[in-house]
Amino acid sequence: MLRIGHGYDVHRLVEGRRLILGGVEVPHTLGLLGHSDADVLTHAVMDALLGAAGLGDIGRHFPDTDPAYAGADSLKLLDHVVELLGARGWQVGNVDATILAQRPKLAPYLEQMRENLAARMKAALEQVNVKATTEEKLGFTGAEEGIAAHAVCLLERV
Image (cartoon, rainbow, N blue to C red; front, top):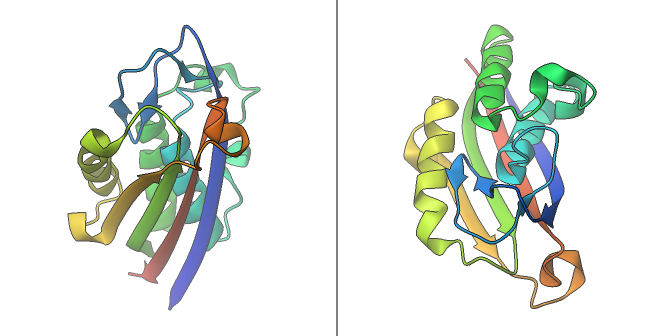
């Protein structure tokens, strides 16, 4: 049995925060605002996985009203999602994710993001793809007001 899922997340860029994407701290003058570390890439991946398994979304599992998740490392939250999947007989078939950001340039960091996500999902590197694009200065990402990410996944029964 196979299941597909889609995830999307967006966070505003602000001063005084670190920019974390796929568990990688990317040097930039701005960071993402959020209750946790605001890692939009990992959040989109988690939402895709949870959606494919019919388990809701990250807001249900890690509410921003819960102080336990203040400043949380999103890769640790991903560990919990993977545990939930495994307990229900699912494993990652593949994940394909896209980060939408005008700046900074992300190409030098994509491979480490991919490695981080694959390791946390207990997947082979070739099962995970991470890419980045600009929106040619259009919309909120193009205006450098925020960063967004989309992810799709395939889950397989163990």
